Image (cartoon, rainbow, N blue to C red):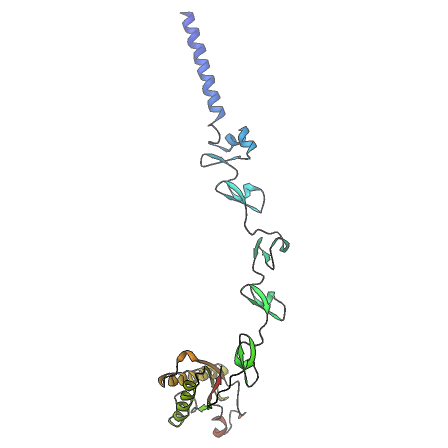
Length: 264
């Protein structure tokens, strides 16, 4: 009887010890329930897998776990951040280091020198012109450069408008008819330039010049001119033929209310 009790006693103690050892060791690596299971594992230490994430020992739980600002935690693994930089010397070419990331050389013209502009993220030489208006008479703006304007053998005449109006006057239709024929015969591309007299605000006159240019373009289109060969622009009262003043004579002002043609 005593022998049986002793066997049972020692058996219970052995079972308790084995259960304690199993609980104390935790799940088999790399499985885990807490960070301690990873930290206490020799493999966890050697592989630097010290964080229990979703039941598995991993290198990291958050970016901060990686301990290096150039690393980020991706699916439990610390990986190098693509494009990370600490200074501009870490970036290739002309890229700049912004918020620890290599990026475009420029985001605005302010980041370029005085003779450059920001174009597509790069500082490039400032173009000579952006429109025909930036060039001298007889020149057009072509890809940022002022070049000699094409010369038409036929003449494109200026048309004029009534005060504060953009409708084509009946006595100007013959001029536009001839202009349309010239454009079609010589397959020209033209810029239709709207202008206004100096009465009214700059903003209003720009809009009025634009309406006049669009009115002429629409008229040319009705006469068979391809609309793709006609561009419009307005200078409002910025390119006066004559300075008339607010109280100037009507005969003076009417010379400024016009649409001109430039061959492109």
